[in-house]
Image 1 (tube, rainbow, N blue to C red):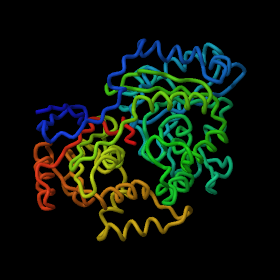
Image 2 (cartoon, helix red, strand yellow; image 1 turned 135 degrees about the horizontal axis):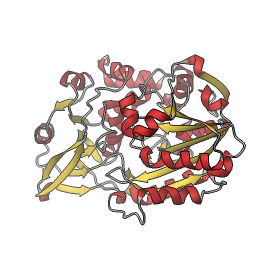
Image 3 (cartoon, rainbow, N blue to C red; image 1 turned 90 degrees about the vertical axis):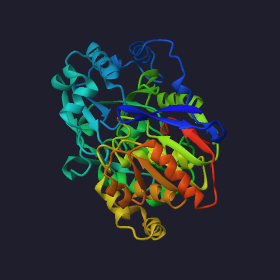
Image 4 (cartoon, one colour; image 1 turned 90 degrees about the horizontal axis):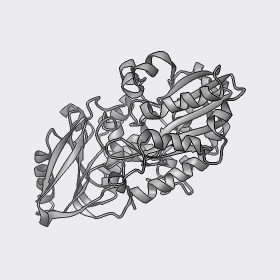
Amino acid sequence: MKTFSLPYGKEHCTLTVPDERLAGVLLSRAHEYKAPKSEDELVADALANPIGSPKLSELAKGKKRCVIISSDHTRPVPSHVIMPQLLRELRTGNPDIDISILVATGMHRPTTQEELVAKYGEAIATKEKFIMHVSRNDEDMVSIGTLPSGGECLINRAAVEADLLIAEGFIEPHFFAGFSGGRKSILPGIASKVTVLANHCAEFINSPYARTGNLENNPIHRDMLYAAKAAKLAFICNVVIDADKKVIAAFAGDREKAHEAGTAFEMKLAGVAPVPADIVVSTNGGYPLDQNIYQTVKGMTAAEASCKEGGVIVMVSACEDGHGGEDFYRILKDSTNLQDTMNTILARKRNETVFDQWESQILLRILLKHDVIMVTKAPQQMIEDMHMHYTDNIEDAMAMADAILAKRGVTDGSITVIPDGVSVIVK
């Protein structure tokens, strides 16, 4: 028997798999990678040796207003490590510079004060100036051009009015943008809903290039690069983290060159070959990434890439915040025929995208091929409304999976385990 400890919210649950049924384990090498220095030292070294850029302290000289774009509560960016060093670098170069931290909520809800304290620490959360991005506030947005896709590029006014725009973030596999980090701080991070909807259109989400770990010919990535350039994003500090959300590498400097170095490092650690199985067990890496069903679709795509046609995905994700998007939930709940709903989405043109349809589109793609069993703290009715199976424990989930497969003539189905579905690139 093989035993796995799977992240589940702020806790773990235990999965036991018979040796004869275990097909494989897909695990990012980031979880075993031993960083050569401490978290603080890694970030300090990156800032001291920026890639393709002067040091941040040099960039700060002569500037009046700096805006630091920072990821929100749904991302495990170790801002308590990164932000103090960014602030120190900026003020070393220019003690009088006016600094604001712009929280890149994308299309998510605003971050609470309690979450700010948890993310940055009490001192920064209470003493620094914060601006909360709200993508639906049209009055806060300014046009900076037209995306390659044809959509208008509207971003938060605070970023446009800054004379030095920088960003912190982290690099992980992303299920349609290829990787997080870098240019994603702008789009969707601080972009208007109008711009996000154009970029996340059905055509682009359906592209075979809009997949985990791929940037080449990725139409979503192309739009994002344009937005970052048009916004004049001058400097980034992105990190790679392990399963414990600890920094294991840091990359700072030019928005594209530093990000490229970081994605190359991440690919070496995260790339894994699929091990096809009848049942694939995956997670969303625990808190904060598994706060809702919306985010959980990311971990499902790793399972999708290794699940046999007609197989079962068991998704371990706490989802204590519920669905994470009312429009996302409604698209699934109101669907009486999943294929018809998918066809409706695919028929929409770029300027006809509706809220959360991209997340719905990807979940529909999975549900049309696989049964999904959610091990979760979300309400049972919500899970079932979204055409998934509900349970609150892993043992019942595995029994349910076996029962589903038995009806299809499969007994003692093979099992692949992905302990952290958002940390791997299954190719």
